[in-house]
Length: 356
Image (cartoon, rainbow, N blue to C red; front, top):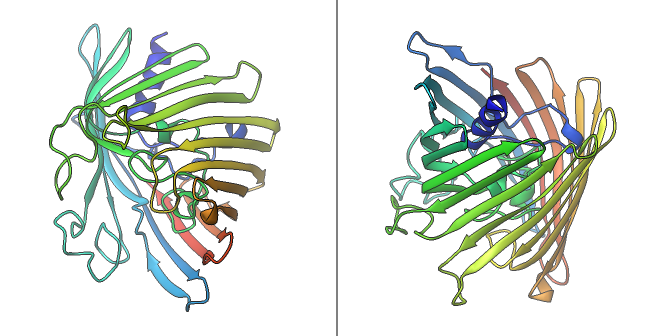
């Protein structure tokens, strides 16, 4: 039982990426092989740099060498035995080794105090692992992100959330929450997670990104049938337009259909519009296929937005080639095609990642 709770706590305080059918090729996870200092603190990280070519409609394409989504990370973590429970700490910063700033590389990127930082805190938290699960405070990746997030290109220019293939923003699959209390537990095939915003101070360049009373939760069931996982997650913004606030809801599932192939599915009912989608529904289907040192990802997504003229389709194909246990190269293409007179967005990319 303690092993189950330990696994749950590690999931709660660390970045993670699920591959369809339980593939273990984790290019996103910060569970890199960590050096251990004499004080018991583990240091870990990853370096990423990518080239991307992005075209919107008939406009000229834009080339970049960058890491605007912060796939490069540097972090520390520890676990201290306190007798009947353990104290767990985790802090993780993101940065861009290509241009030196943690924010986007636009002309106004350095006008805000946070955007100009070379290192920007991604998550940082302290919590207790008890016989009843993990409870912690600080900043966390939300259950809405951690449960049922199957995109192997997350945090790159090719990512589905950058092209409407999944949700984005604090209440979507890209979500991290500041000033939050978090609970996570696992028992047998079931995992549960709950987070609640605790800050009255929201908005501005240095305030919390979620308000007091905002909440997120997730429930996942795994291996009830061999290779099958499924579940439900919600992010709720109490400041939404209605008296009860607004929510993003996600159903997700993956199944290992062959030893080297898994399929996945998510359906998101979005009341909270993001920068790459409106309010409505996003249905995403895809597969991960492993062949030697290569992991191929194929995805099709359909956005059925409340404003019919903004409906769209997203397609993505990529290949992750593992050069070693610590280094891989990814090449891919993602396209968002908007119905009617909207401008399609097409992104080609090539990225190099090393974990340590």
